[in-house]
Length: 534
Image (cartoon, rainbow, N blue to C red; front, side):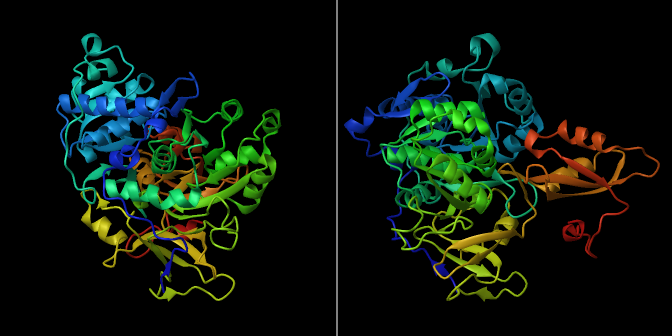
């Protein structure tokens, strides 16, 4: 049986992301600070942000970007990222956000698959951006380097070149229910990365679903260190905070001492993190050197948070710690603890080893993956484990150009099969217990084994290979481990294998353990038996 959200339904937005976030901006809110670049201290008010977004949209349209075109955005967190992202959407185009850690090969692959018409990036990522864009067939004029020397100097337009025409934002008419706003890439439940088609309604409704649960207000100061190119940062941080008219203090990357100093200096009240940051907050001695008393809530996502670790962070910072669950295909949030823990809003506090309840306007079910039987909500205790299925208005439109993968993930009744094993308690609170899917989660990033296996099989000294996630004894984190079968007569070392991978992938995808074996266990159909390797 399916179980619904305990939270009241919300009104599903019927407008574009731009209209939903900024359409009702008041004069008073226009003067509020929206964005602060932590490094420089530069501030952007809500009025200035909307003006810059409109100008950016006009500049893109002036350079030939049309409704439905795909524009890639490769950049770390900054106010410029926020302007570019929302400028792309305001122009009626689709933003495919690219991981700032990607290699040129990764970038080219995404640009090609997404059919990107333009790439927007920044100087620190210039080398890999240009190489990737060239392989994808983009001309120099189609690679915008926002802080670059400019089109007259090196052929690549910069922000000044873009805005030189002073063109107005175009008048566009799109259907929010079908028009694609964002195209992040995810490996889904298995396999290589696929373009996740998220409509304007998907992104807007997910903000509407989580806003009343999380309770961020215009008085909050939110530290933004999670990357905006990731769907977690895009929706939960950037879009939800802007809709609340809160102040976002933006960090381009995570550095513990800078993170702590930013919280102290800006009196941040809300922090969104992934579990590796929780480890530092709970254990690192430098924490005691900073005044973090302004923090009222820390929310963890992107990977499961250990219950004891969560309680340690709460005690260390003297604030509430909560957890949520989601995936790119869900825009991304599907389950969440309220900022009050649930005591007032649901009538029961969510255990910290859970991911909370189904969000508004949605239903979940737990299904036995072997039999297909639905597992009911128990009268007490926890249910038997099963695969978590979810249905709601934030479910993606599908995978780009991949009807088969879409059909495997979303069934005829509209339920998305998450590939995660979960239990449910009597209140409808969900607990993620394992993964059916083969993805490895390293520091919150998705590492698809199939991608690493394909790469390793190109090495002349490797006969066969399988990659799984294992727990690192030192950090307690999941890391990629390769089981390698050597070609006969070769002298291959573990270091050589790891170096080979490191030279060809983003840093978070690196293989961190290698074991040599005689044969990879496989089924009769040739499928790798990863459970045997584990």
